[in-house]
Length: 109
Image 1 (cartoon, one colour):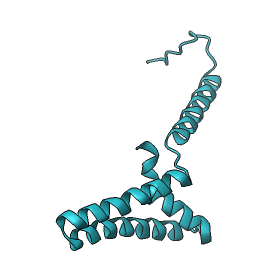
Image 2 (cartoon, rainbow, N blue to C red; image 1 turned 180 degrees about the horizontal axis):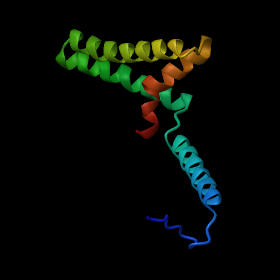
Image 3 (cartoon, rainbow, N blue to C red; image 1 turned 45 degrees about the vertical axis):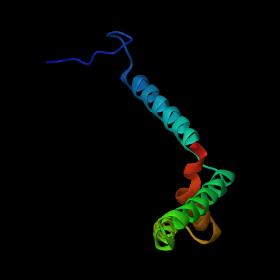
Image 4 (cartoon, rainbow, N blue to C red; image 1 turned 180 degrees about the vertical axis):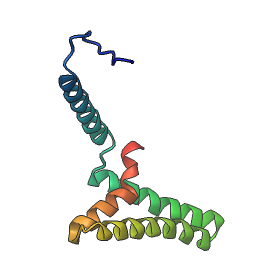
């Protein structure tokens, strides 16, 4: 029979170790949420980048290509909004979350 090896030794309290593990996991997830959190100014910047990119693509590759770039991001926004509504999130909060999802990537630019 194999026994569990605890870092504290053979007299370790398994319940305390599990609680410490859960606490560490919560802290790690909180730090990850903070790191990838988007805000509205970054989303506005992302929307601006999409508009400029659509215009540039439209100038160099033709208006249909520019419309496809803008349409792809519009479709992403609508898909995110649909998911928010299906999750039961309503009103302006649903629109804000979908907007942050579709354009908040500019937080890392």
